Length: 273
Image (cartoon, rainbow, N blue to C red):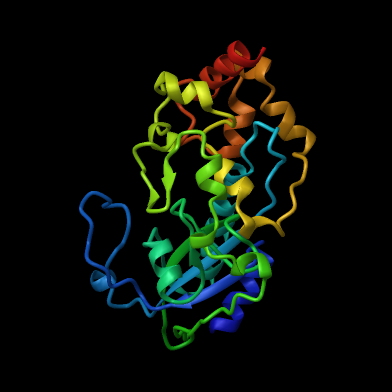
């Protein structure tokens, strides 16, 4: 098995692109121990496989976050792909690496003011999955070089000449200097209880997509309506009654515990009727 074979399997699993980068070699960050910043303790690792799952957003007036649904789908797709590779004898480790830093460093993406990165052809509407791969007598993997030329006129627009996200951010968390993470509502949404000001300006469940909705780099990514089963699972009246299991299965349970979705639904209903 080699790079080409992996790319084919990744495509069959639903990923739009697969990049082969060197193993991470950054200084470790003790405050993020779940991320492998430096692969020195995995000397068998030959490459970092960076997988891109592209998705379509839902219209701005839809409260359901397309990102989280696709994040959950991409997670399960990466697990299935890893099992398939392991069954063929590939040594690997499914893990988190400093994805944004590596995507920028190796020419896969460009930075945005809102701290996200944009991938040509997909904008910021992507989910990354990653794993370390090791070669053997039957499998050989090698890092590849990338310098993706930005051919899209929309993607050529520099953040330096654009204020769309600055003007649109409901929390005023974005400036010419980038994102002030402690002003961003997403910073406060890992738990189930948010500050009142977050509930006051929140538009979508579990996060905020306003800066992505206005970003010119996403102009070519068309919105789609959510399927009926997703709309039904996120019905506000249903969620407010504590019937959240269908929605939690769609977006993953790790981020939706302690009545998170029900509390959001209650606030949406109270605020917007």
